[in-house]
Image (cartoon, rainbow, N blue to C red):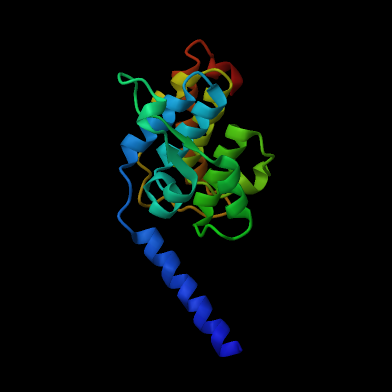
Length: 199
């Protein structure tokens, strides 16, 4: 029995590896289709932008096949942008039950995006702790977008310094990277905000 269980487990790992390394979908086209469907709904727009900016999930064939549905052409006008819908609840359920293998940051981003899209509660301490400067900036932009400041996503994404670590306990350099990213995001989203007064 133990030997059979080991064989089954190995088989499942092989299938998961094959699914994750299969030819990925066209990320940008898929992101555009999801944006078109979410248009006008700030929270859903924010969730889509967070997932698209993170880039990991929409490039995974196993995720897209299971949780993203591109609408049929007969459901859209000929001159409309292609649309797609994402089963946020299904993706979150699979993640929480260990049926969606991923890195810690991938899981954090998906939980946060899913919470924005469908209102599922999320533990912010767990979901935010350890994110690098780029992902923290994406999350900050998503929160601002959901609150009614969609221009936040136009803030430039910095290139983290190779010497900057990503520990669970924030180092001074990591704090500085995150601070710079958040300040840029806030300045783009809310031009009239006087950050000097808040320091």
